[in-house]
Image 1 (cartoon, rainbow, N blue to C red):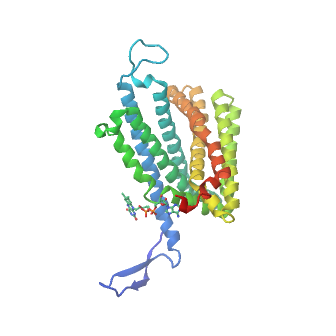
Image 2: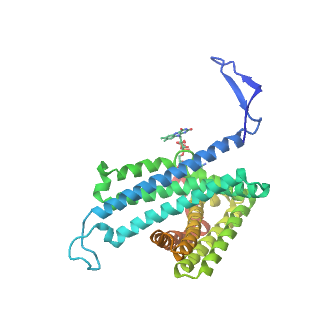
Image 3: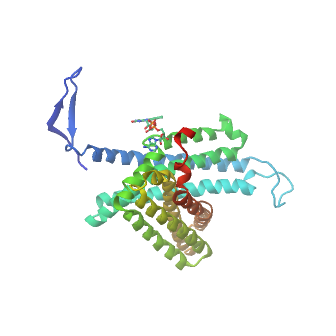
Length: 341
Ligand SMILES: Cc1cc2nc3c(=O)[nH]c(=O)nc-3n(C[C@H](O)[C@H](O)[C@H](O)COP(=O)(O)OP(=O)(O)OC[C@H]3O[C@@H](n4cnc5c(N)ncnc54)[C@H](O)[C@@H]3O)c2cc1C
Protein backbone atom coordinates (compact mmCIF):
# COMPACT_ATOMS: atom_id res chain seq x y z
CA UNK A 1 0.00 0.00 0.00
CA UNK A 2 3.03 2.21 0.52
CA UNK A 3 1.83 4.40 3.37
CA UNK A 4 4.66 6.68 4.46
CA UNK A 5 5.27 8.81 7.50
CA UNK A 6 5.22 12.35 6.24
CA UNK A 7 8.19 14.49 7.35
CA UNK A 8 6.15 17.61 6.49
CA UNK A 9 3.43 16.71 8.95
CA UNK A 10 5.25 16.24 12.21
CA UNK A 11 3.09 17.02 15.22
CA UNK A 12 4.86 18.23 18.31
CA UNK A 13 3.34 17.34 21.67
CA UNK A 14 4.43 19.51 24.55
CA UNK A 15 3.04 17.28 27.31
CA UNK A 16 5.48 15.66 29.73
CA UNK A 17 8.62 14.55 27.85
CA UNK A 18 7.75 16.24 24.54
CA UNK A 19 7.13 13.05 22.51
CA UNK A 20 6.92 13.56 18.74
CA UNK A 21 3.95 12.18 16.76
CA UNK A 22 4.27 11.49 13.04
CA UNK A 23 1.31 11.55 10.71
CA UNK A 24 1.28 8.22 8.86
CA UNK A 25 -0.22 8.57 5.38
CA UNK A 26 -2.95 11.16 4.81
CA UNK A 27 -5.10 12.92 7.36
CA UNK A 28 -8.56 11.44 8.06
CA UNK A 29 -7.66 8.05 6.58
CA UNK A 30 -6.32 6.55 9.80
CA UNK A 31 -9.23 4.16 10.36
CA UNK A 32 -8.89 2.82 6.82
CA UNK A 33 -5.13 2.28 7.34
CA UNK A 34 -5.73 0.67 10.70
CA UNK A 35 -7.97 -1.91 9.00
CA UNK A 36 -5.09 -3.03 6.75
CA UNK A 37 -3.29 -4.11 9.91
CA UNK A 38 -6.45 -5.41 11.58
CA UNK A 39 -7.46 -7.55 8.60
CA UNK A 40 -4.00 -9.16 8.55
CA UNK A 41 -4.14 -9.77 12.30
CA UNK A 42 -7.67 -11.19 12.15
CA UNK A 43 -6.79 -13.48 9.27
CA UNK A 44 -3.70 -14.70 11.15
CA UNK A 45 -5.73 -15.47 14.29
CA UNK A 46 -8.19 -17.47 12.17
CA UNK A 47 -5.27 -19.53 10.84
CA UNK A 48 -4.06 -19.96 14.43
CA UNK A 49 -7.45 -21.52 15.23
CA UNK A 50 -7.16 -23.92 12.30
CA UNK A 51 -3.62 -24.87 13.34
CA UNK A 52 -4.50 -25.66 16.95
CA UNK A 53 -7.58 -27.60 15.79
CA UNK A 54 -5.40 -29.68 13.44
CA UNK A 55 -3.00 -30.44 16.29
CA UNK A 56 -5.90 -31.46 18.55
CA UNK A 57 -7.18 -33.75 15.76
CA UNK A 58 -3.81 -35.44 15.26
CA UNK A 59 -3.45 -36.06 18.97
CA UNK A 60 -6.98 -37.44 19.27
CA UNK A 61 -6.44 -39.86 16.37
CA UNK A 62 -3.25 -41.14 17.96
CA UNK A 63 -4.98 -41.67 21.32
CA UNK A 64 -8.04 -43.33 19.76
CA UNK A 65 -5.80 -45.88 18.05
CA UNK A 66 -4.02 -46.71 21.35
CA UNK A 67 -6.75 -46.64 23.96
CA UNK A 68 -8.53 -49.98 24.36
CA UNK A 69 -12.02 -49.89 25.90
CA UNK A 70 -15.29 -51.87 25.33
CA UNK A 71 -16.27 -54.39 22.69
CA UNK A 72 -17.35 -53.17 19.24
CA UNK A 73 -21.18 -52.83 18.94
CA UNK A 74 -21.22 -54.92 15.77
CA UNK A 75 -19.75 -57.95 17.56
CA UNK A 76 -16.79 -58.05 15.17
CA UNK A 77 -14.41 -58.68 18.09
CA UNK A 78 -14.97 -60.79 21.18
CA UNK A 79 -12.75 -58.50 23.27
CA UNK A 80 -12.25 -54.82 23.98
CA UNK A 81 -11.10 -52.83 20.94
CA UNK A 82 -9.18 -49.60 20.38
CA UNK A 83 -11.80 -46.85 20.79
CA UNK A 84 -11.37 -45.69 17.19
CA UNK A 85 -13.62 -48.65 16.28
CA UNK A 86 -16.61 -47.20 18.20
CA UNK A 87 -18.97 -45.25 15.91
CA UNK A 88 -19.27 -42.28 18.27
CA UNK A 89 -15.48 -41.90 18.48
CA UNK A 90 -15.32 -42.01 14.68
CA UNK A 91 -18.07 -39.35 14.57
CA UNK A 92 -16.02 -37.10 16.83
CA UNK A 93 -12.86 -37.63 14.79
CA UNK A 94 -14.73 -37.00 11.54
CA UNK A 95 -16.24 -33.80 12.95
CA UNK A 96 -12.76 -32.63 13.92
CA UNK A 97 -11.24 -33.60 10.59
CA UNK A 98 -14.02 -32.17 8.40
CA UNK A 99 -14.11 -28.91 10.34
CA UNK A 100 -10.36 -28.41 10.04
CA UNK A 101 -10.32 -29.26 6.32
CA UNK A 102 -13.27 -26.96 5.59
CA UNK A 103 -11.83 -24.02 7.53
CA UNK A 104 -8.37 -24.53 6.04
CA UNK A 105 -9.76 -24.56 2.49
CA UNK A 106 -11.83 -21.45 3.23
CA UNK A 107 -8.77 -19.59 4.54
CA UNK A 108 -6.66 -20.66 1.53
CA UNK A 109 -9.32 -19.37 -0.89
CA UNK A 110 -9.46 -16.07 1.02
CA UNK A 111 -5.64 -15.81 0.92
CA UNK A 112 -5.65 -16.42 -2.85
CA UNK A 113 -8.24 -13.64 -3.23
CA UNK A 114 -5.98 -11.32 -1.23
CA UNK A 115 -3.08 -12.04 -3.61
CA UNK A 116 -5.29 -11.50 -6.67
CA UNK A 117 -6.64 -8.27 -5.13
CA UNK A 118 -3.09 -6.92 -5.08
CA UNK A 119 -1.38 -8.49 -8.08
CA UNK A 120 -3.92 -9.37 -10.78
CA UNK A 121 -3.27 -7.35 -13.96
CA UNK A 122 -6.99 -6.55 -14.50
CA UNK A 123 -8.28 -3.73 -12.25
CA UNK A 124 -11.86 -5.11 -12.21
CA UNK A 125 -10.62 -8.55 -11.11
CA UNK A 126 -8.52 -6.88 -8.42
CA UNK A 127 -11.59 -5.06 -7.13
CA UNK A 128 -13.79 -8.19 -7.15
CA UNK A 129 -11.15 -10.12 -5.22
CA UNK A 130 -10.68 -7.30 -2.73
CA UNK A 131 -14.44 -7.27 -2.03
CA UNK A 132 -14.52 -11.05 -1.66
CA UNK A 133 -11.51 -11.02 0.68
CA UNK A 134 -13.06 -8.28 2.83
CA UNK A 135 -16.22 -10.38 3.18
CA UNK A 136 -14.20 -13.44 4.12
CA UNK A 137 -11.99 -11.92 6.84
CA UNK A 138 -14.60 -11.92 9.66
CA UNK A 139 -15.54 -15.48 8.65
CA UNK A 140 -11.97 -16.78 8.65
CA UNK A 141 -11.41 -15.13 12.03
CA UNK A 142 -14.80 -15.70 13.66
CA UNK A 143 -15.90 -19.08 12.30
CA UNK A 144 -12.49 -20.80 12.34
CA UNK A 145 -11.80 -19.75 15.93
CA UNK A 146 -15.28 -20.64 17.22
CA UNK A 147 -14.92 -24.01 15.48
CA UNK A 148 -11.45 -24.49 16.98
CA UNK A 149 -13.23 -24.53 20.35
CA UNK A 150 -15.59 -27.26 19.18
CA UNK A 151 -12.68 -29.25 17.74
CA UNK A 152 -10.40 -28.91 20.76
CA UNK A 153 -13.32 -29.72 23.08
CA UNK A 154 -13.95 -32.89 21.07
CA UNK A 155 -10.24 -33.60 21.37
CA UNK A 156 -10.62 -33.65 25.17
CA UNK A 157 -13.74 -35.84 24.84
CA UNK A 158 -11.92 -38.42 22.72
CA UNK A 159 -9.35 -38.68 25.51
CA UNK A 160 -12.08 -39.20 28.16
CA UNK A 161 -10.92 -38.56 31.73
CA UNK A 162 -7.32 -38.55 30.56
CA UNK A 163 -8.19 -35.49 28.48
CA UNK A 164 -9.61 -33.53 31.39
CA UNK A 165 -6.54 -33.90 33.57
CA UNK A 166 -3.67 -31.87 32.13
CA UNK A 167 -1.20 -34.73 31.58
CA UNK A 168 -2.06 -35.49 27.95
CA UNK A 169 -1.99 -31.89 26.68
CA UNK A 170 -5.47 -32.19 25.10
CA UNK A 171 -7.00 -29.77 27.63
CA UNK A 172 -4.23 -27.26 26.99
CA UNK A 173 -5.31 -26.99 23.33
CA UNK A 174 -8.87 -26.26 24.46
CA UNK A 175 -7.68 -23.59 26.88
CA UNK A 176 -5.31 -22.04 24.31
CA UNK A 177 -8.08 -21.96 21.66
CA UNK A 178 -10.33 -19.89 23.93
CA UNK A 179 -8.28 -16.71 23.58
CA UNK A 180 -8.66 -16.87 19.79
CA UNK A 181 -12.36 -15.94 19.93
CA UNK A 182 -11.50 -12.95 22.13
CA UNK A 183 -8.41 -11.12 20.92
CA UNK A 184 -8.18 -9.10 17.69
CA UNK A 185 -11.90 -8.48 18.15
CA UNK A 186 -14.31 -10.89 19.82
CA UNK A 187 -16.59 -13.03 17.67
CA UNK A 188 -19.39 -10.49 18.19
CA UNK A 189 -17.12 -7.71 16.86
CA UNK A 190 -16.39 -9.82 13.74
CA UNK A 191 -20.13 -10.37 13.40
CA UNK A 192 -20.85 -6.64 13.73
CA UNK A 193 -18.39 -6.06 10.87
CA UNK A 194 -20.08 -8.78 8.80
CA UNK A 195 -23.56 -7.33 9.41
CA UNK A 196 -22.73 -3.64 9.07
CA UNK A 197 -19.82 -3.07 6.70
CA UNK A 198 -19.92 -6.33 4.74
CA UNK A 199 -23.65 -6.98 4.31
CA UNK A 200 -26.03 -4.11 5.12
CA UNK A 201 -23.85 -1.41 3.55
CA UNK A 202 -24.20 -2.79 0.01
CA UNK A 203 -27.71 -4.17 0.56
CA UNK A 204 -26.40 -7.75 0.61
CA UNK A 205 -25.03 -7.56 -2.96
CA UNK A 206 -21.59 -9.05 -2.20
CA UNK A 207 -23.13 -11.86 -0.15
CA UNK A 208 -25.59 -12.68 -2.93
CA UNK A 209 -22.87 -12.61 -5.61
CA UNK A 210 -21.01 -15.24 -3.57
CA UNK A 211 -24.25 -17.22 -3.22
CA UNK A 212 -24.55 -17.23 -7.02
CA UNK A 213 -21.06 -18.72 -7.30
CA UNK A 214 -22.04 -21.41 -4.80
CA UNK A 215 -25.08 -22.25 -6.95
CA UNK A 216 -22.59 -22.78 -9.81
CA UNK A 217 -20.69 -25.34 -7.72
CA UNK A 218 -23.99 -27.09 -6.90
CA UNK A 219 -24.67 -27.44 -10.64
CA UNK A 220 -21.20 -28.94 -11.17
CA UNK A 221 -21.78 -31.39 -8.33
CA UNK A 222 -25.15 -32.46 -9.75
CA UNK A 223 -23.63 -32.82 -13.22
CA UNK A 224 -20.89 -35.06 -11.82
CA UNK A 225 -23.67 -37.50 -10.93
CA UNK A 226 -21.99 -39.54 -8.19
CA UNK A 227 -24.10 -40.29 -5.11
CA UNK A 228 -21.72 -38.31 -2.88
CA UNK A 229 -21.64 -35.29 -5.19
CA UNK A 230 -25.45 -35.16 -5.56
CA UNK A 231 -25.93 -35.45 -1.79
CA UNK A 232 -23.43 -32.66 -1.16
CA UNK A 233 -25.18 -30.49 -3.79
CA UNK A 234 -28.48 -30.89 -1.93
CA UNK A 235 -27.00 -29.88 1.43
CA UNK A 236 -25.14 -26.99 -0.19
CA UNK A 237 -28.35 -25.73 -1.84
CA UNK A 238 -30.27 -25.86 1.46
CA UNK A 239 -27.47 -23.99 3.27
CA UNK A 240 -27.18 -21.40 0.48
CA UNK A 241 -30.93 -20.75 0.52
CA UNK A 242 -30.79 -20.35 4.30
CA UNK A 243 -27.89 -17.91 3.88
CA UNK A 244 -29.73 -15.82 1.28
CA UNK A 245 -32.82 -15.62 3.53
CA UNK A 246 -30.62 -14.35 6.35
CA UNK A 247 -28.84 -11.85 4.09
CA UNK A 248 -32.25 -10.45 3.06
CA UNK A 249 -33.31 -10.28 6.70
CA UNK A 250 -30.09 -8.50 7.73
CA UNK A 251 -30.23 -6.05 4.80
CA UNK A 252 -33.87 -5.21 5.59
CA UNK A 253 -33.49 -4.88 9.38
CA UNK A 254 -30.06 -3.50 10.22
CA UNK A 255 -31.41 0.05 10.18
CA UNK A 256 -35.15 -0.54 10.56
CA UNK A 257 -34.94 -2.96 13.50
CA UNK A 258 -31.28 -3.11 14.60
CA UNK A 259 -31.91 -5.12 17.78
CA UNK A 260 -33.52 -7.88 15.69
CA UNK A 261 -30.71 -7.85 13.11
CA UNK A 262 -27.88 -7.84 15.67
CA UNK A 263 -29.58 -10.51 17.79
CA UNK A 264 -28.66 -12.79 14.87
CA UNK A 265 -25.22 -11.36 14.12
CA UNK A 266 -23.06 -14.18 15.51
CA UNK A 267 -25.43 -16.93 14.26
CA UNK A 268 -25.25 -15.25 10.83
CA UNK A 269 -21.44 -15.31 10.99
CA UNK A 270 -21.52 -18.99 11.95
CA UNK A 271 -23.97 -19.83 9.16
CA UNK A 272 -21.92 -17.89 6.59
CA UNK A 273 -18.62 -19.45 7.73
CA UNK A 274 -20.16 -22.91 7.69
CA UNK A 275 -21.45 -22.33 4.15
CA UNK A 276 -18.13 -20.95 2.83
CA UNK A 277 -16.21 -23.90 4.32
CA UNK A 278 -18.83 -26.37 3.03
CA UNK A 279 -18.66 -24.79 -0.42
CA UNK A 280 -14.89 -25.38 -0.52
CA UNK A 281 -15.44 -28.99 0.60
CA UNK A 282 -17.84 -29.39 -2.35
CA UNK A 283 -15.21 -27.99 -4.72
CA UNK A 284 -12.59 -30.27 -3.18
CA UNK A 285 -14.87 -33.26 -3.72
CA UNK A 286 -15.12 -32.45 -7.45
CA UNK A 287 -11.33 -32.31 -7.80
CA UNK A 288 -10.87 -35.47 -5.70
CA UNK A 289 -13.35 -37.41 -7.86
CA UNK A 290 -11.47 -36.41 -11.03
CA UNK A 291 -8.08 -37.28 -9.53
CA UNK A 292 -9.30 -40.63 -8.15
CA UNK A 293 -10.80 -41.51 -11.55
CA UNK A 294 -7.38 -40.81 -13.09
CA UNK A 295 -5.81 -43.15 -10.53
CA UNK A 296 -3.82 -40.43 -8.77
CA UNK A 297 -3.28 -40.66 -4.99
CA UNK A 298 -6.49 -42.71 -4.67
CA UNK A 299 -6.59 -43.32 -0.85
CA UNK A 300 -6.07 -39.59 -0.20
CA UNK A 301 -8.77 -38.65 -2.74
CA UNK A 302 -11.26 -41.17 -1.32
CA UNK A 303 -10.68 -39.82 2.17
CA UNK A 304 -11.30 -36.29 0.85
CA UNK A 305 -14.57 -37.40 -0.78
CA UNK A 306 -15.74 -39.11 2.45
CA UNK A 307 -14.79 -36.06 4.49
CA UNK A 308 -16.67 -33.70 2.14
CA UNK A 309 -19.75 -35.91 2.38
CA UNK A 310 -19.47 -35.96 6.17
CA UNK A 311 -19.13 -32.18 6.26
CA UNK A 312 -22.30 -31.81 4.19
CA UNK A 313 -24.42 -34.26 6.20
CA UNK A 314 -23.22 -33.38 9.71
CA UNK A 315 -22.04 -29.76 9.66
CA UNK A 316 -23.54 -27.97 6.64
CA UNK A 317 -26.91 -29.47 7.61
CA UNK A 318 -26.92 -27.18 10.68
CA UNK A 319 -27.44 -24.11 8.47
CA UNK A 320 -31.24 -24.21 7.96
CA UNK A 321 -31.82 -24.39 11.75
CA UNK A 322 -29.58 -21.37 12.26
CA UNK A 323 -31.57 -19.51 9.61
CA UNK A 324 -34.78 -20.20 11.56
CA UNK A 325 -33.24 -18.94 14.80
CA UNK A 326 -32.16 -15.67 13.13
CA UNK A 327 -35.20 -14.91 10.95
CA UNK A 328 -37.94 -16.35 13.16
CA UNK A 329 -36.34 -16.38 16.61
CA UNK A 330 -34.99 -12.86 17.13
CA UNK A 331 -37.79 -11.95 19.57
CA UNK A 332 -36.54 -14.72 21.84
CA UNK A 333 -33.37 -12.66 22.29
CA UNK A 334 -34.84 -9.18 22.44
CA UNK A 335 -38.10 -9.50 24.37
CA UNK A 336 -36.60 -10.37 27.77
CA UNK A 337 -36.29 -7.12 29.74
CA UNK A 338 -32.75 -6.29 30.91
CA UNK A 339 -34.14 -6.06 34.48
CA UNK A 340 -35.36 -9.67 34.25
CA UNK A 341 -31.83 -11.13 34.13
C1 LIG B 1 -4.08 -12.87 26.33
C2 LIG B 1 -4.53 -11.58 25.70
C3 LIG B 1 -3.68 -10.92 24.81
C4 LIG B 1 -4.09 -9.71 24.25
N1 LIG B 1 -3.23 -9.07 23.40
C5 LIG B 1 -3.54 -7.82 22.96
C6 LIG B 1 -2.61 -7.07 22.18
O1 LIG B 1 -1.50 -7.53 21.90
N2 LIG B 1 -2.97 -5.83 21.74
C7 LIG B 1 -4.19 -5.29 22.06
O2 LIG B 1 -4.48 -4.16 21.65
N3 LIG B 1 -5.09 -6.00 22.78
C8 LIG B 1 -4.81 -7.23 23.25
N4 LIG B 1 -5.71 -7.94 24.01
C9 LIG B 1 -7.00 -7.31 24.29
C10 LIG B 1 -8.12 -7.97 23.48
O3 LIG B 1 -8.04 -7.56 22.13
C11 LIG B 1 -9.46 -7.61 24.14
O4 LIG B 1 -9.55 -8.34 25.35
C12 LIG B 1 -10.62 -7.93 23.21
O5 LIG B 1 -10.65 -7.07 22.09
C13 LIG B 1 -11.98 -7.83 23.94
O6 LIG B 1 -12.12 -6.59 24.55
P1 LIG B 1 -12.50 -6.51 26.09
O7 LIG B 1 -11.61 -7.46 26.83
O8 LIG B 1 -12.49 -5.08 26.48
O9 LIG B 1 -13.95 -7.12 26.15
P2 LIG B 1 -15.32 -6.31 26.05
O10 LIG B 1 -15.26 -5.36 24.91
O11 LIG B 1 -15.68 -5.79 27.40
O12 LIG B 1 -16.30 -7.51 25.66
C14 LIG B 1 -16.96 -8.33 26.63
C15 LIG B 1 -18.09 -9.07 25.92
O13 LIG B 1 -19.04 -8.11 25.40
C16 LIG B 1 -19.20 -8.29 24.02
N5 LIG B 1 -19.35 -7.00 23.35
C17 LIG B 1 -18.68 -5.84 23.59
N6 LIG B 1 -19.07 -4.90 22.73
C18 LIG B 1 -19.98 -5.43 21.93
C19 LIG B 1 -20.78 -4.95 20.86
N7 LIG B 1 -20.66 -3.70 20.40
N8 LIG B 1 -21.65 -5.79 20.26
C20 LIG B 1 -21.79 -7.06 20.71
N9 LIG B 1 -21.08 -7.56 21.72
C21 LIG B 1 -20.19 -6.77 22.34
C22 LIG B 1 -17.92 -8.99 23.54
O14 LIG B 1 -18.16 -9.72 22.34
C23 LIG B 1 -17.62 -9.90 24.73
O15 LIG B 1 -18.38 -11.07 24.64
C24 LIG B 1 -5.35 -9.15 24.57
C25 LIG B 1 -6.20 -9.84 25.44
C26 LIG B 1 -5.81 -11.03 26.02
C27 LIG B 1 -6.75 -11.72 26.98
